[in-house]
Image (tube, rainbow, N blue to C red; front, side):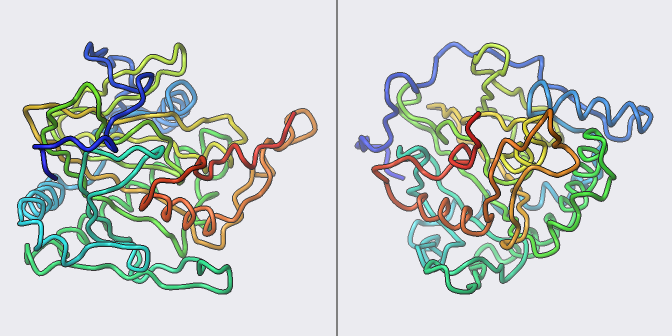
Length: 343
């Protein structure tokens, strides 16, 4: 990513530019998953964090530190390669997984480069013409030689954590722990390796512009540089999430907002960049099968609390969103509020 000439595509509109004063979040809950809380207390803490913040951090989560260090080292090695080497696995509108450095969020280019791979390989999604399904295959680079193995080992461990967290979230909603399991049998989950180079205009650009995650749950590993900001629900203030060693940052996605009929809400977040230090992060996006019809769960709706959303097909939603990452649109990207039932 060239730093000499600043492309206007990176520049945020004035109202969305980052503030240079940082408010660090003491308030984002830090939850110890195996540290002395009773099962009931843990469920209560998770429910409170989902309701009040939509974000929380977990420690003692069961993901071996060595697996995380290995994927982080492989990611650093990959992004340090020459551009032409990385572009051998460049993604496009046909090969949707792989390397990319011109992603847009809310129609503004992000100051980052990424490498995407799906948890299932191949992953099944609807065809663009709406007739049947297509297969998306992972593209693995020749270098670094251990990137694929590091990624696949890491994914196995994070999937276990996702299952545990979804069980706790289900219990916090008064549902059986396994209530969500069936949605993920043919999951469309994917992992992204993010690299945010130093940016000469950190007051004008963002690593990722403000957005909500479209899937069910996001499990984020970030380095010690920091930059993730969350929009606090109580006052709309942007709050910096302070890196906690070996913790994962968890956030509720739009699908949980719909499933829970807004008992829990996904929250806007963004990534700041800085002019001195590069930053790396690895989000795991937990997504259901492409054929899932996302709608409020019957157990959480009744006459007093009717469904707030019409059902929508996850696969079509997902592929539409994925396509918009490649180009600037003249219209708003598809969002869950397009399926909200008017009061």
